[in-house]
Image (cartoon, rainbow, N blue to C red; front, side, top):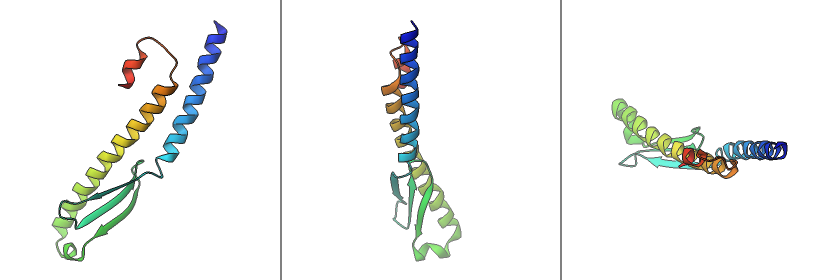
Length: 108
């Protein structure tokens, strides 16, 4: 009994380490997103850190349109980053979970 418990604890610690490594790796995964007309482009990491924003000269004269494009483009990028992040972390967590009946349905 204690051997099984110790084995599960070891596996959980290993999984925790892999999750932390995956979180760090997500800092290097870059996501590029552009507005529908290409006048605004953003680059963020899978951990949702903004790395770059580019705005066309023409858009600088229209504050309201610029704000709208920034909001829409950043939200699209954040949505993609969240999806990638969650997928990667779920895969690592599922891989490292001990075989406990009913637990596998949590990661689908």
